[in-house]
Length: 99
Image 1 (tube, one colour):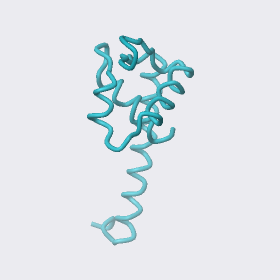
Image 2 (image 1 turned 90 degrees about the vertical axis):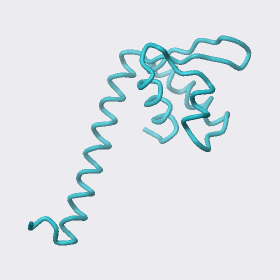
Image 3 (image 1 turned 30 degrees about the vertical axis):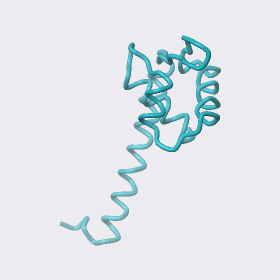
């Protein structure tokens, strides 16, 4: 999963049933443009990972779906496995695995 959609989905998952607003995204995801945020949200909504509720012209609320929760768990596990493999490799190269 690409970085911005992953960060959006991860934030929505952390917010749970409360959901996440536009302001939450700009506060938590540094350096994201509105266009990139909108593209990621629409992609996630189309995939069935989140539900989008418009509150006003430019205000919205995103909530996680069951499919989104499953995806977050799977992506987190994939990223954790990759991190652990990289860490093990670096320790091996540094000779720290023989301790």
